[in-house]
Image 1 (cartoon, rainbow, N blue to C red):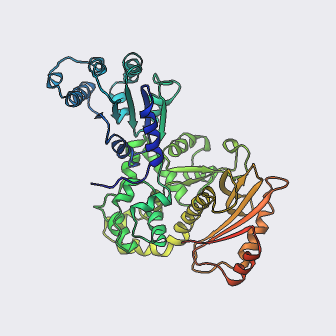
Image 2 (tube, helix red, strand yellow):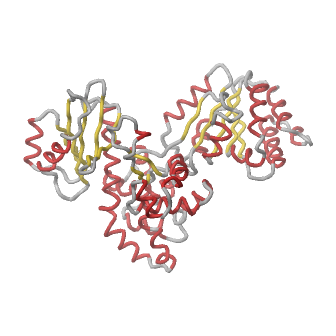
Image 3 (cartoon, rainbow, N blue to C red):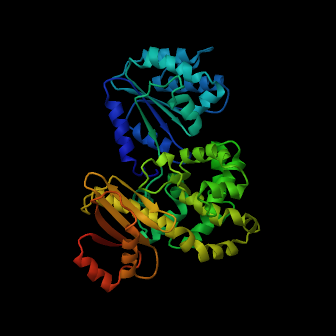
Length: 463
């Protein structure tokens, strides 16, 4: 049996919903492979549950399958023999069921029911209002197609709007959470694994690592028979229409085009035509839009940059997709050599920055660093950039950080360069400034001595 990893916050939320003295309706959504079904199955382990996985077949077939599921749950074979039965008829049978415990009803791949019958959300709304709402039920609607889940379950125009008592948009695992998949790997080994595979549970589960990262990449990604070889293609085919447009945008960003104008220019299209595609990719957690942390109105900022938010997809578009012809000819060694020559400078060093932000957030949350910040991001202007900037409004704290994934120790000049760049970032007139340096290789003696005399400098060797 597979070990269930993490999701404590989500499980606690679902348990709280279950313990309510009234019926509850929870929507769980997120991209494919993110672990929605695994979360639900963990939650329902000790609960009376009707778990129904909707198919893409015609509605009559889904009704037939649901009827069979309910028949099995109630241990009443006569229900399965009923003909000409409707959704309402099945739920009528359910609400008459006597149970000491709240019954959980899961409609997994909910969007399939709405695809085969666009009126299904309205049918379910009526069933909720007239049958389930005043009973002792927990209805969970789970789906992968984010646009459809929003249209049929979450948006203001949805018939179910206002009925849900909670929702979970499932996200990728952080570095610390994902590490649980590889408990025997050192932090340094896992920096490489996480840079290649990212935080999607299915990808972590499928990536077999036995001490040699390049061998693992070859066997788990570059091999044409491997699960991950064409995964981005399968993912986008399921989630979006016009797959070519989305592919072109992701490829452009992977090649280093982060400004909207650069992406548009590289694709020879007007900027206005990209908005809907970029927004959809953000919803899918595949890309993210960043603005300098000091921007007062981020959503209106014209300084936004776009980055791939999924380490595996970023790796695939940098090191796999451009070399598909070589891989189809089984020239894997050529691709491996290319990866070896570029992966640290063009990929791992950037992932390292994101991991350092997560570590800083954990250190502050656990009060291991006496700093208070509300948000952590990065900062840039036309001339320079700072890897990490944290801002805390209540105490007027501003943290400036630098991250170096290098074989060379950080010397004192890196600190003074950071301090000079920080002079351009004035968030508060009376701000209290702190400096934090992350280094793979450690720090020089003179920087260690200098930091020991200064209370506002923190040095962290990681990993």
